[in-house]
Length: 217
Image (cartoon, rainbow, N blue to C red):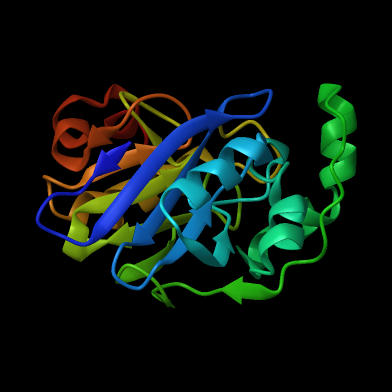
């Protein structure tokens, strides 16, 4: 758990599902409203965390539509009534979620169509966030920046000392490098980067140490 001091925001990030995708809950302690990003499994843990902090989910956000980032999305929507959101460019991947699960031997968890298509620089209705279109890992990959709270949820675009795979459906190494350099590396260097898998990092650390980004052009 990360309780963001000097603000009214609470963040919980924990690995879920068979591929240990990082699910993030970001909530406003004053309003009780929250978003859930990438609910890739472990619905009981997600619900218990929301209940512990007395948070109501107002939106379920997806950084992209690879199978490990959605496995609890349908159940979470059923339990909370919150709408599902995704970038339009990942619609084809969303439509093939059952096929993706079959390819990896992971049981498919039914999920409805997204309720809302995210757009670049769209405001997020909780925690003063903004959606950023950062393609490359997938065509519709999104990152979510909460400037006031110094947090970037980067999904599988940027990892600590690495980047997301580009050999999966719709991946492109040059595009992901451009997304990181032109969009993420222009953010505050002290911003905490919540990655799609593995530990947190920071924008400044990646700018100085990430060997993969500088090697792509």
